[in-house]
Amino acid sequence: MASVLLIILCFLLFLLISTVGFIIFMMSHSIGPKVIFKTIGRDIRAARLYFKTVSFVKKCHYQNLSVVDLFRNTAKKYPHKVCFVFQDEEWTYQQVDDLSNKVAHCFLSRGYQKGDEVALFLENCVEYVCIWLGLAKIGVITSFLNTNLRKDSLVHSINVIDAKAVIFGKNLSSAVEDAIPFIEKKDTIEYYCFYEKSMTDNNESVQFPAKSLNSLLDDASESSADVQKIKINFQDKLLYIYTSGTTGLPKAAIIRHSRFIWVSAAANYIAQLKEFETFYNPLPLYHSAGGILFLSVVLAFGGKMIIRKKFSASNFWKEAVKHKATVSQYIGEICRYLLNQPRTPEETQHSIKIFFGNGLRPHIWKEFQERFRIKSIIEMYGATEGNANLTNMFGKVGAVGFVSRILFWLYPVRLIKVDPETGKPLRNAQGLCIQCQPGEPGEMVGKIVNSNPINQFDGYVSNKDTEKKIIRDCFAKGDMAFLSGDILIMDEEGYLYFVDRTGDTFRWRGENVSTGEVENVISKALNHVACVVYGVEVPNVEGRAGMAAIQIDLKDIDLDALYQHISKRLPSYAVPLFIRICSNLEITGTYKLRKVTLQKDGFNPEKIADPLFFFNKKTYA
Image (cartoon, rainbow, N blue to C red; front, side, top):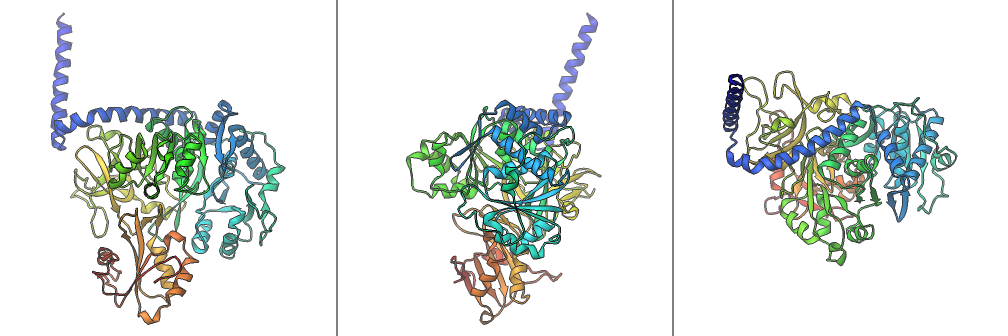
């Protein structure tokens, strides 16, 4: 009896000490009882969803499963169910499996093997998925080329990887032809032309040596590739997806099977999807949003996806109703386009219950949700290659996600203080980064744990680019963290809100625009004049429009010729919307062009005495 009482007393003492310790810890971190009371329910719900996600990923890791393995399991489970719908044509899982097998056998017979790299330059269609999935079945890594890229940026995107082949759409052949003379391996690289069924000019020949992928696939076998001979592993490379950085050219981010699986699990469990949802996907498949997010759910768990060639605001709700879509995706600009459309009966007759995406601004959030009667808007934050990803799955207006104030150790992402002028992280006396308190803006970072597929950072094809995104001795000596390049701010409940990017890169029309790339093109066109490019806010428009300040005499510049030059060398979204002609550009003590004042001026003619020009779709006026 005495021993039982002693055990009870010890337990009560432990409980008391733990409670006191917890209270002291909470107080030392400025976490009061009000915050605990308001967030504990949310945190427990989120932890449950998070553990489901982690459990699935760890199971796949333990069993060494790949995306190919998961798709095969899904195809066996739903062979005759519709997997994709494109231009009213339905594709079953069996048909997708068959065509991807054809792709696998086609390239296997032509000497391609595990570890080879192929560039895919093709507009949205079901075959896009089948091609990269088929290549994945034999271990070939596919790089997704942005279909807006031309000349220098397209050449760079091909050169930066070890491309053995380029697979391109017939309608993009002229862009490939223009790039070929500048491709480093132009004498050994192979070109495969693919044309869609809906194309009307299939009989026109390509003006450079290219094999017809359609003809080769017609003769290929539909049987499954030998998995014993070609074992694809959980940590093998799967894809390269390009992301623009401050270096001025696209960077090829490494997407392993493990990351693809992690995204599929997170989207499935955190969004609390039901079995076999119908996804409406109007986004480009070369983006991680359109090409991985819910596509990974369809391949790994099952579901039907409606793929559209290009986004159409006028047809969005009509098609959502027609296909009985239950889930859709957005970027902030898409939400604005939809709000600007005339009201239609379909906008409230649809079955979409979940709208998932990023970039939805707080001031249109409620109006959007109420007008279109969306039950759940899930705003997310994260980079294609990053490990500091957040999700606002509980509908907090304006927030991009949250981090538990109580269970913060569960998911190691933090905000750290940075120099507002340089964007460089600030450090304390011990040489470690300084974590932000609620209300303090800071750069989002994610601790790198390479033994954990959820917290690992795979980086880029370029080791130099990878190193630039890693900060060492961040939370403790010897550790590493991923630098997001974004400034966020956290409230007392742990909700995070996007503020701005730390670098020069800005987003316009859903794309990252690199100021370095644009500056180089303009300067080169004008005999190397001083030029700075930056993003400026346009009222009621998502993102920042490009603006170029050029140090040149007005009589020495031909704006028509300038537009013709840059429009041929830059993607359409990177062409500056505004031009400012300056007599002098401010420089720093280290002879760097300073753009802070220019950014503050924006394009406001009341603040600017310099000549201003606006792009009117044909030239600058």
